[in-house]
Length: 378
Image 1 (cartoon, rainbow, N blue to C red):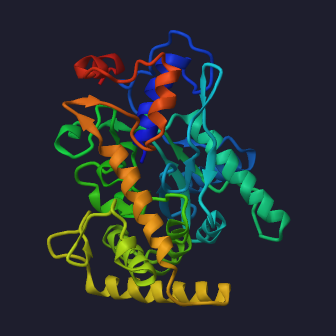
Image 2: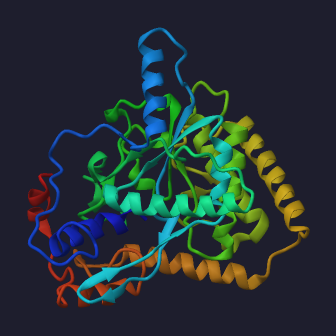
């Protein structure tokens, strides 16, 4: 649900000088007509040394780091946020981290990890600081957490592009963005975009998107991350081209949900027809071998989870009902429109009232029209 960030960054620039929570000043949004920036690296001394060594090897005939690059979205994938609250004239929200975030540590041997979010860099930094804080707390409990940053590559709003087809899809917004990969020099055969919004992929790069279920801060969606990590470790390493396997991982995630929680837990953000994930899949469909491998990996993950918890069996019906209600509410808030007018914030239903108060009651009550894109240089 990156459109939370797409809209919030515009609102925060217009009303709060570029940062949610700062005092209101008249400050225009950051321009988006400049050449796309290169993926920004974490400013960590050890990582800078590693990057220098990597570049030295590449230019002087040494071994190149050919690990697959996994680019994770933040909002709805690795993090979420609390409901907005007013503090004076400012809107305040807190980031929250998805349960089992420590499972990502197991990916470092086979993958390079990165972030690709339509949020501004300062917003990403705050979210990643909380992720790091959570991991350090786990280190004190005995979890092995390395000193180096978990995410090597950080791509933010300046790397995104406007969604020129927002009018053609339900819930499209004028401030919607997409996440190009090839234009930033990324090898499409070795790069996967892990996201929860299918429309974030650009034309020709759909197969690079690995769709994951929305994280809705409730028990059903809390169980997804360990399954995702297990699927990634089983299906992607050793492949020269990761694109055929990305949709198979999504297929495995849906299968895991349905096997454990039943039809009421089917992720509504993942296009799914006749028992198969459809986004990023070629005309011949998913490779049968990959589907079989995904099902096997899901069964392994389920066995590991049952062994860890010391229990197994069907979940309580109330969990599924709670999940279904949360999913419908979140997506309905994204899709709500009236005659081309945006009538509320795009994610949480209760956000509109707080935002209206913050900007003197002037929510988006008029069509934004081309002037919005003109101001951003789009």
